[in-house]
Length: 91
Image (cartoon, rainbow, N blue to C red):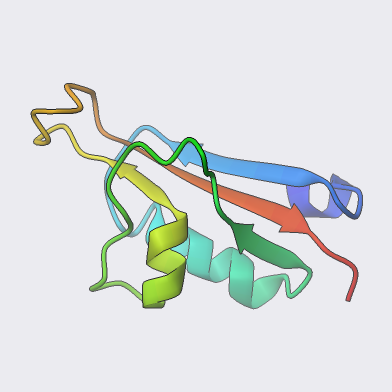
């Protein structure tokens, strides 16, 4: 429902406090497939974490646009969470 309330050019940040691919990459795929007016965009210059899992339905390019904060990454020293950023475009 948030996609429908978003104005063209508006930004939607999808974030979860889990690293479960079914709650993250698969929901990103769902948004991209269901809403052709939503474009997955880079979070740079703030891309601090790992990329999306390549074993999911996201393309390699799409995997590079999301961030996966994995608690097993000693350098990050964080709880697990996930972030994807979209912009609503006019189609």
